[in-house]
Structure formats: C-alpha cells, structure tokens
Length: 114
Length: 115
Image 1 (spheres, rainbow over the protein chains, first blue to last red):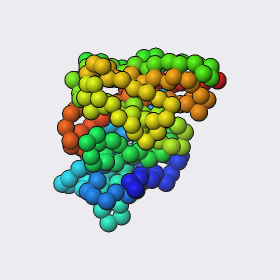
Image 2 (cartoon, rainbow over the protein chains, first blue to last red):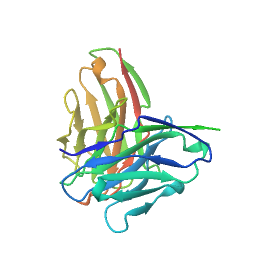
Image 3 (cartoon, chains in turn red, blue):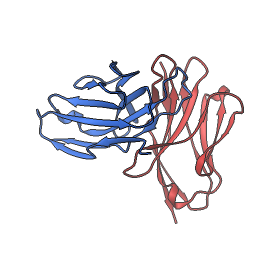
Image 4 (cartoon, each protein chain N blue to C red):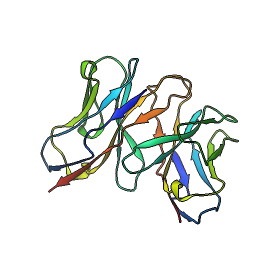
C-alpha cells in the first residue's frame, strides 16, 4: 500500500541554523513527490515537487529537496532558517490513476527560536 | 484571481445537525477534492470529482455527501453531524490531466466543531 512517513512530529531549530525534514515513502512505481507548507490558520502551499530528472529539486522560499530512490526518501532542506519558516510541513506522494489523489504524511511542525 | 475559496471559515454544530461546505475555484480546473485534516494524521481524502456532474469516494467518505453541479463549485454535505467529524476541512483543485505531477491548489480551510 502507498504510504508516506514523516518520522519527526515536531522539530525546533534556532534562527539561522540549517534544517532537514525527513520523508520516507512507500510506492510501487516511480513516485511523484511533493512538499507542502501550512502556516498557522492557512491553507497548504506547494514548496516544491519532483517527478523526474535531477534528483535535487529547488523550491520557493529557499527550500530544496533531494530524491533518493535507494532510500525511498525525499528530505526537505534549508541552509538557514528564518523565523517566518515556523509552520507545519507535509510530504505527499501523488498516486497514479484517474484522479491523482495525494497521499500525505502526518506532518512535521517546525518551531524556530530567535 | 482568488484561487480556491471556502465558505464558511468556522462553524460549530450540534450532533445531528446538517450543513454544507462550499468550495469555489476560478482556475477552470477539472479535478476537485475534499480532504479532512486531523492532528497526527495529515490530510485524508473524503470525496473527489473529475469533472462537472461527477463525484467519487475517497478514503474516508462515510457520513459525507458531495455534489458538483457546476464546474467551479464542489459542495461537501454533512447530513447528520457527529463529534467524530470535528476537523479542519480543505478543498483543493487541479488541472484536468492524468499527470500526477500537476499541482493541487488548496483553499484556506474550514474549521468545524461538532458538539
């Protein structure tokens, strides 16, 4: 069965520190992978997505993610975190089929200390 | 360009009451989705639609009904609300292709509490 695991429920980093959020997926075919961010009280905004080609994907707000097929991972990174990055981050895999639903992980809540 | 909008933003219901959540998109998207978000569980698909006049069940459809009478609108109904339906509901839309790579655009959410 298709699934997405985000091992870290909550992460706290200091402003200016680097960040890595983990995502592991289980999917039989070539996965289409997404990272979304949800700021408090807001909807979900797409940060980046991977579907083919270069395994290092650049996104908005200075985020990047690396697809590693051998590890079934799609970890999100940022070299220097800003206080405004405090939010909840969701990894998702796009399932194949006629309606292309997204399968989401449980999310990782990021807190940023000044 | 409003994108995806949801009405209402907040609602409190008593057990057994009914209500309808409205989702509207102005991007001429074919595909529309209703998700619910619960703590520690991410988003789960309730129902979806691949075009005007079509609807189908997702992962957690029980207790909900949907309608897509107009392409731009997707309604989610609760006929008899239960406390287990307390959640945040998100609507999303996507262009009408079979590509899983297309981005789903999300609305701001509706926070529903059932007492």
